[in-house]
Amino acid sequence: MRVALLSKEYPPEVYGGAGVHVAGLSAELAKLVDVAVHAFGAPRDDALVAATYQPWDALAGDAPGLGALRPISVDLAMAAAVGDADVVHSHTWYANLGGHLAKLLHGVPHVMTSHSLEPQRPWKAEQLAGGYAVSSWCERVSIEAADAVVAVSAGMRDDILACYPAVDADRVHVIHNGIDPSLWRPEAAPNVLALRGIDPERPTVAFVGRITRQKGVPDLLRAAASFDPAAQLVVLAGRPDTPEIGREVRELVAGLQAERTGVVWIEDMLPLEQVRPILSHATVFVCPSVYEPFGLVNLEAMACGTAVVATRVGGIPEIVVEEETGLLVAPADASGMAAAVNRLVGDPDLAARMGAAGRARVEQHFTWASVAQRTADLYRSLT
Image (cartoon, rainbow, N blue to C red; front, side, top):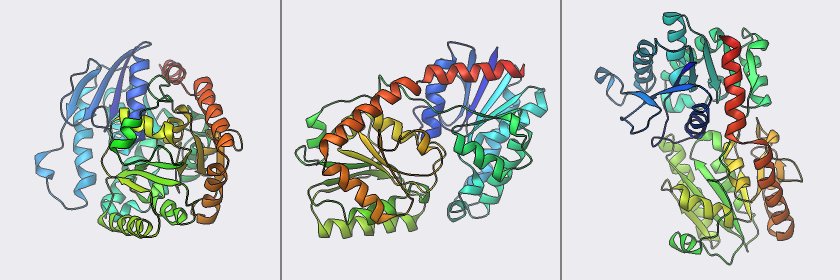
């Protein structure tokens, strides 16, 4: 079976969970089917990559709407290039239209994985202006016609059916994201902590993510004003979606740094070799998202043996087991988040037990091999 995977992100050009997903899935799928990756961006020296694509030169410029038109130009080229596939599988709205057009053009099944939903992210209008209506259209036309829709959590499946009632529920399949526990693992590396200005002797509250409304970074920073003064806050966050949220985060960080010690903000996108020991050292990892279809970053922290405090949204309750691998709080609840964090900072034995349970849960339920097998089974059911 020949499967064409269509994605905006693919290593080394990865900036979010969808890119991590495609990288992990494709590597394991290649053991089960013939995989050809079609990705946006520069050429890759990767045996799985069949082709890469750049947007049309005519769409160059800074106008917000062009940010939605450029992916469509790539989708056209992708659809033309996958005529030899038995199945096309697209990821995110950037590539979903390419999968839909390939289905129409070549008469092959289209599987699309829904990593997020445009109707659930209205703040993207800040970033894309009128392009948000275009991205929403790309998603709608694709999801309503897809032969199968993969939801990365049961919560995401509910959202799909609520946002798109024209989609037949029988076509929506829950297949969780996975993780490679050999890459994400507990690791002590004091030199990395020192390099990044992190005190290895202090309890640590850590966050990793992009600066976007979805990830709730301002909510975390407001809650941090009430964190136990003994703890340091380490925030790995960059690439703000808009200048406005970038300024808001910068002002909140400056306010915290003026009031307490141990506020470390790292804007660079760090390599795995540095993120892993930072997560491993943390007493608690915080995921303050207001919208999270799955929440892969929670798996990464759990795989590193770290307890999690996360918001009770989307797929997160399917990952973080309340009172076993972490604590769940309401989104945008600064006092609730601070109370949960302070409970774990004040009880390091409890935090350690939850961290160990999180690592065990990852190993038992969230490997890429199991995700790939379920995905390959879905392909075969359609051909």
